[in-house]
Amino acid sequence: MAIVRRERQLPDWLGFTLPDWWRRTFDLEPERGGWLRMEEYEEDGALVLRTEAPGIDPEKDVEITIGDGVLRIQAHREQKEEQKGKKGFRSEFRYGELTRTMQLPEGVSGDDVKASYKDGILEVRIPIPSQKEVEVKKVPVTKA
Image (cartoon, rainbow, N blue to C red; front, side, top):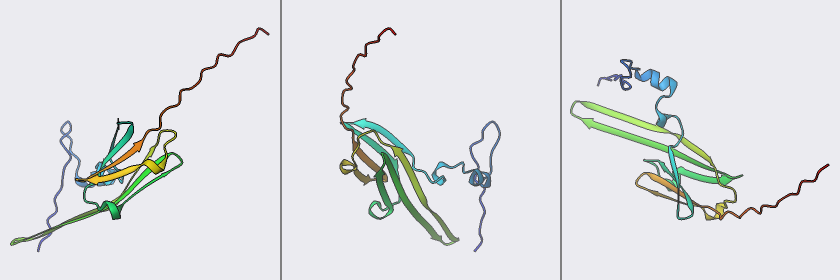
């Protein structure tokens, strides 16, 4: 069995390409950087955070914590792919820790946060507390 080395290239930017080892050295692939991509929006009085996390077991590989007004999502991913054929064997694997932290709106309670996982998307719903109206008081200015 022979091992074949493939040099993957980044897209040709102005006639300039970088070999695979440069990408790994300078971490130019976001998925290898150890952080989760996230989108956030408000829906029905809740802050919704969605992150792509394919290939994980949400009950075993995900930990979501809230403390000091910060939400932290940690996930461990381990994927292995093997292909056996008449001409040889090919195996690839990917693993690592993925983390994302986010400052939460003031007054959020960790008791009401809900998380779900479906089709490789982790969704966290955080109820946004109603904003109390700030009382404005006029302060008189006296001449000194």
